[in-house]
Length: 381
Image (cartoon, one colour):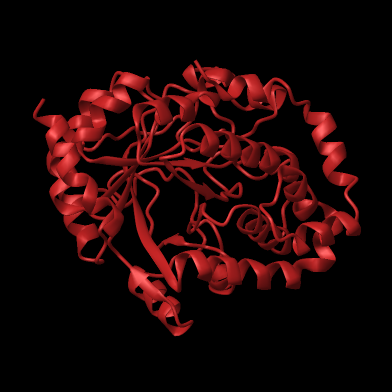
């Protein structure tokens, strides 16, 4: 059975890091001038310190490639937090099991109240988020939730605990389209430090989750790391390596990359490595130049000013009006947040900003309308 673990184990963190930091201006120029598909070595050059003076050129190229593939459109989505119950200890998360706070899991009626509030914003694309607590928010809970919300949304994504392949297959007919699973960091030793307890402490089980998703036939897979836990350049190279493997192995599946930077939460964790705004722009452009097909998503973790300025540089989807606590839209606005958001503008304000830049706001994912009949067929079997 194919597995990214085999490729991962062939790479050494320190060697990769040294290779990235040894890239030169010549390597960057070679990557930018290339007319054929860019390689992982090109990606190293584009995220290296040597690429910093070429940021304007990278931004222009990223803009051109994004418009060629995606046009002048920005997909809108919103997260809905279902539960803050969690059995893991994670040093960077407000939901960590060692954080003594009141836990909350939405009931069926509360989910519908949240849906009603979210629909008033105009959303048709929703991201369901939970802590990792299999006994409370397991597959049965997900099935009931999907049955409740499917009539209201054209695209349903999930960011929950890693599941088994057969469990993902079970959820697809109920309307599950996309699954986001962030490795947090590909640095094994630091991963252990940040995940000392719970199922999430199993590094390789999490690492192989996208393989289980690919075999299950999930429509779209989301990847990413939590920027700030380790050297961002090395971590993001491993994300690109993972993406490259997945695209070659599960070629019918679509992929999306996110760029979450470590944000404050109740309990706090200072980033080990700081990434400034120019470096995040460099990373966004590097991913686009490396891969013209991958979707790039930006959340409300980032500031209003930053999000305004990167719309044209490669981003294809964006959240707005986000609440990172269970029931945050209507049921229980004051419950514990997973992390603090930065851009607090309403969805309408974000939509207006996008239109002012000459882009079309997309609330519905039409691509998935073609999958509805197939999913209903699976459910009837």
